[in-house]
Length: 123
Image (cartoon, rainbow, N blue to C red; front, side, top):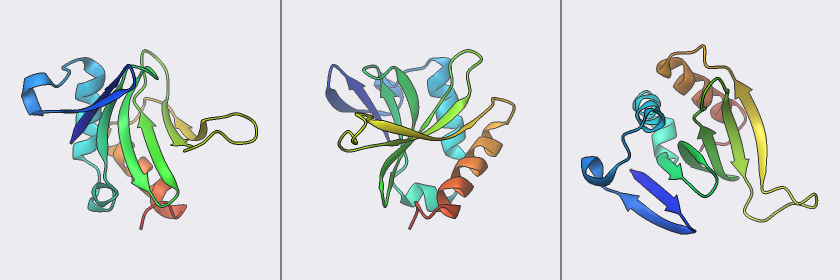
């Protein structure tokens, strides 16, 4: 499933009709296809968030939402824990892991799944 967030409004993106077809979206879909069943059970969704300016894969974990942000340009993949409420420092997200774009989509899916599984984020 894919969702799109724009101007604070969340809506579902239906298949090929209104799904974005840019490079980031295609890359996110490719990585999502390699995710193991454990991640799919965690409610993995592709998210196009124009408010926060990212495209990624969102997982509903035991501790809250975790997003794998797809990099733009020469950036790195980021695995970010989105906080429900800002913490005492005012942060709304915590970056848990960053890794370079040297991996193929299957490798990115494996790194993400193993990180979440080994740290107890997934059920």
